[in-house]
Amino acid sequence: MYHFDWVLFWKYLWPVTAFQNPLIRNGLIVTLVVSVIAQAMGVILGLLAALAKMSKIAPLRWLQQAYVWFFRGTPLLVQMALLYYGLGVTHIFDFPDWHIGAVTITGAIQAGVLALGINEGAYMAEIVRAGIEAIDVGQMEAAKSLGMTFGTAMRRIILPQAAKVIIPPLGNEFNNMMKTTTLMTIISAGELFYGFEQVNALLFKPFELYLDASIYYLAMTTVWSFIQSKIEASLGEHKAMANQPGLFRRLLGVH
Amino acid sequence: MATIIAPPTPVMDNNVVVKFDHVNKYFGALHVLNDVNLEVKKNETLVIIGPSGSGKSTLLRSINHLENINSGHIYVNGRMIGYYEKNGRLYEESEKNISRLRASIGMVFQRFNLFPHLTALENIMEAPLNVLKVPRETAKADAVRLLQRVGLADKSDNYPSQLSGGQQQRIAIARALAMKPSLMLFDEPTSALDPEMIGEVLDVMKELALGLEMTMVVVSHEMGFARAAADRIIFVDDGRIIEENTPEEIYDHPREARTKEFLSKILH
Image 1 (cartoon, rainbow over the protein chains, first blue to last red):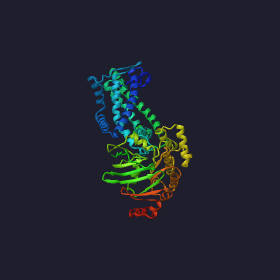
Image 2: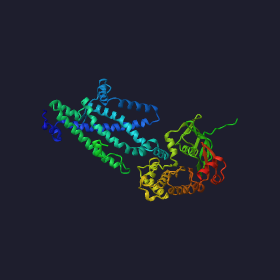
Image 3: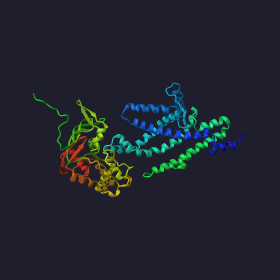
Image 4: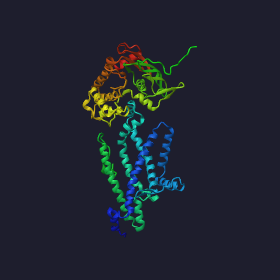
């Protein structure tokens, strides 16, 4: 019978002791920072792609189509490896480590953020487009008839309204993003799961350690779900959002 | 030898605010605007009537280039709308220039189209602030004055969803007036309203038509308004202007059979 190592389990679960191992502490920081930056990149790229899709300029629409087609049609894991090893070996971009003060951003982290962000943009494009298209065409007509250019109308009238439609799925995307960062393990980018893998390589306690890793991710996604429902509640001030599932239902995935 | 100087654009009467010159528009095979020629004079109130699908809304919306046209010219205050001419060919104007022209033309929609994320006051201030770059204090003072003028001074901090249809439409009129337009377009402004709210909107429009210096083009079947405020009525059907006359003549002595038939339907 398997002897469950409770001491090890607790050691790598309790932050005070777990963080004594820099692989775990830095791994958690990398996971959180990478998630936020990659998601922000995804939102910006998604917005640009959504605008390109609605553009009158045909080459912009083709570019958007090619982008979405490639990044939604190939596995993120492959994109990440292609970006890091492919660009490295061809010397198109070597991903040198960046040193900012005492912090080192390794090439693998840069490649990871880039791959996650670009991939996310291809998915955010659809979410942003759906948000913009949910706004009545009369809003754009009213804005134009007041002399607003397309850009001003988007910024002042359409996007503030579309944000209410975009933010709930955006929150779900961020929840996924925190979990998807684990793919960076393939390029040894040193995020949280990579930390647990390294510890496991040394101690070979996969059950205890991967259970700890699971609990860390569960903690992150749960905290985020609370933050998300607060954000959505504040958005609902002027508009009832009765059809949005509550926090409990969302966490447990019941409908 | 006589020197012939061709004017770059047709010489226009200063009193003509809107001019349609052989305007045609197609939606696929459908001829929505069929050789439309029309002039609207300064301070005139023109009412457009016609059955649904007759092209009356398209006609109105082409004045501020919310609809493009396939041939002909539309001028507002002597300037061609939506297009510029080069070597005898028409090209669509840059977005910036179209926006600049639209800023001087007010428009009121059937479904109000107020901005739901902004209060009544903010709705009115939005375009003066972001298009005309008016200082905030000036924009606010103007907006407050306009709210008083449409009788809604106490609603300045309300969001559109908290207002009745009639109130929303009055705010929409105030929002258009905030740009100090010389020309106002109304696209069936009372058709989406409950009957008891139509009067309050028409009152504001009447005051506008009769009181101030304002040129108005109104698509509406409200006969009471037309009789009280319109200088001229045009009846549009199948994309053509069928009949054109004073309200009294059109309503009491329509000449064309199609006008008679249409009026008998809307006047019961």
